[in-house]
Image 1 (cartoon, rainbow, N blue to C red):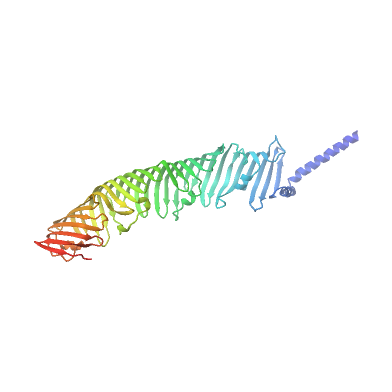
Image 2: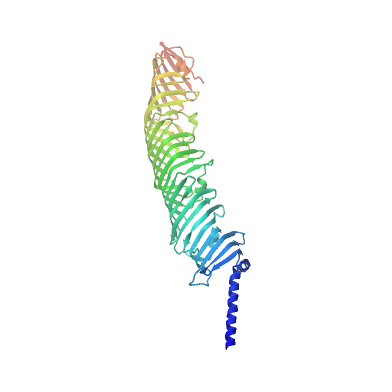
Length: 535
């Protein structure tokens, strides 16, 4: 009996020694190599382990150092230290764990989604996660990410919550620093309750939902002190086009500046509600308020700009208020834009020095401004200059009022309808000075333009009336009376040539306008002279 007992004790001692030897052997470099080889044989991955550690103080925990995993496409996952806490209630199953801690790991996001394991808690410490998007065309990288997900189970739709921070997140070449991400998943919808980070010297905060169809529902997005400078006009489009369908319930961009080739915004603020981006912008009773210290749009500078809009839909926008400073004067208007037609209820212009563009008749506006109508126009104490060498003019202390005006028709600039009254303190036409010029135009039922003009010229006075055809290229009639004004001025104004010298006369003309090719009669000193076309 004693011999059997001695043999049993000896056997158990040997078994225990072998277990201890195996236990300590596993934690050596040779043991780690042996485990790597066996795991590689049992899976489709190439696995390398630097060291395996276990502490009796944490009996249900094992740690692995210098873990490298390669798949058949040579995608590499590296983890400096992996800590696994086994589920003490089900110790021998190897697909669910109490916790998993990844320290200083470099993970492939797509591989995480394919993982067949789960844990009550997944914790990341100073790790990097790379995510490939849009069939590898785009990349999203989280660097020095810390935080956790609980529970972690990519194959189950159960609810979970997460809290993560990342020192830097990059989407292609766009960088965001010190990102915080908090939220939870419930019934197929991911609720991000807190998303924020730094962009250059600015920051953003947001709340949103990722819906089951992968579209985004952004409850709030606020950006502050954002500064963008690029030589590419498509700078924003290149990122917006990567988004799925996105609804912005509230979008704000404050104290920010944008500098692109076509436009510049300095110290701008924009707040908008209920807008949708789905490869293009969509509106549904959306509101927008925008202001900026300075704007340069197509090389035209504006300052102290305020814009308040109601975006009914993509083709119908109410302009509740638009004001700004341009050419040292102030603009103020309200109206609406609908189906590429801009309708202005009231336009007030004060102290603006306006320079007419060259070859204004050749300018073709974009399709979005096919027609422009103004119900009421007021211009106070401004100036207007035309530098066209064929017919230069300049008016100082310029004032105008108008009603039912159409300034653009079929994308062409001009005056096509309405009533316009203009007067100035003084001015010049083709270098001929005049005082108190007064001009008016209106249209009759035949859509002909009826013009009237008076001015003091060189101590005398001119009065004229004219009728221009609807296409504004033919003068149906021009009747001009001069009192004490030399007829030489008519030649300098390129109306006629080689007139008899007179200071009191009457002139009646008709013919083509551009270029002038006029004929008619000239009455002076009791004589009548016929005028033939000059071109």
